[in-house]
Length: 170
Image (cartoon, rainbow, N blue to C red):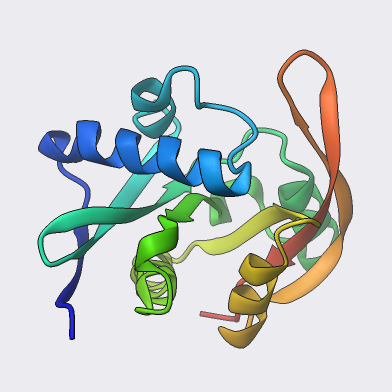
């Protein structure tokens, strides 16, 4: 059995996480943005905290918590809950390379992000493209619930249908 470690992202992880991101994009078409400059995308100034998943010491996954900036999931949750924007963060940039799936990497990355949010009294929201059904199953298995539908906008005016979710109550 392979040894799984989930730990906070370190600067020394950047090249390996970027390579994993490019690998995931090649196999899954995710993400739809950020692949041209993966290191900048992973280290965006909007990142509050991020983690990597390693199998036997090799970076195979990543997740981040981001400051909200006009995401539909944030607006939907604010309307439904009455929460203010500074009480909400966005779970984003979750990916696991295909060869590492079925080792609970995605689940453990999600749990790390959810624990961090709970400790900082932040409610997490996200949007997921409707094509990413495996991701939706993971979110729902971890207690996330759908709060609406939206369009995920990216690139030069492109968009794709997305489902918005909120994390379970902290």
